Length: 254
Image 1: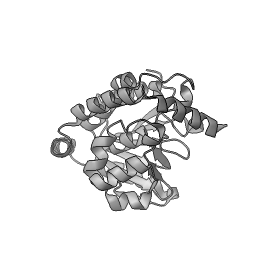
Image 2 (image 1 turned 90 degrees about the vertical axis):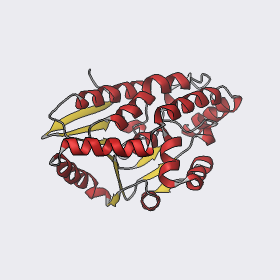
Image 3 (image 1 turned 90 degrees about the horizontal axis):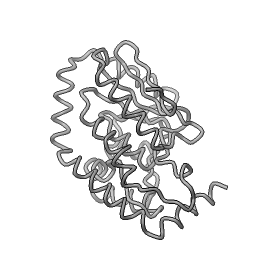
Image 4 (image 1 turned 60 degrees about the vertical axis):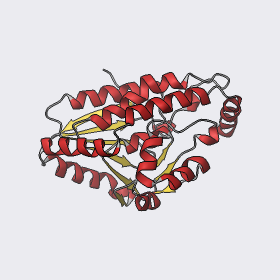
């Protein structure tokens, strides 16, 4: 598959998957989800790959689903978008044999938070932050957010983050357990490379089995939760508030 929204590089057992829409802060469109699925399939089936670094190009990890890619007066069938383009991606990442390092190099919002937390180890630059804007757009958190965030940070913090839509700084995210380490921005990728090299030298079977056991202990109902998110998002996007919220979003971009 030819990639347009992402890049995939493999070097000495380390695969680097990078979202490459920097002019859109790496916002996700349907094509992005499809390309990411293809990339994760490719590395999963490559016996030479031992670890994945997953990040965004430029000054952001990802700005969530790209509302600018849709027509202002037309709300897409978001249930179908999730079912086809993004829920399978979340499952692929969590079911992968490979350790995935999510490298949060800047803003990480909406569905991009779900993708970041689908990694096994999350590291962030000091200027990075997480943001759950869904309810402010009259939508619901998706891409695994409603499973990952409550399990990682607890119900009260998850509710505050999702309902109030306040930014979570990298340091705060680390204190909540969302992030393994916070590094200075100019050190972030070097630290990711060091971590990837360490993982690539460990037993792949041991890593795969350990990752599977962690997922079984904490995410046994992930597929079901993704379906619940899909159905709820499908219902939410039919509400009249959504068009008004999207129109307000477009007005703010002018």
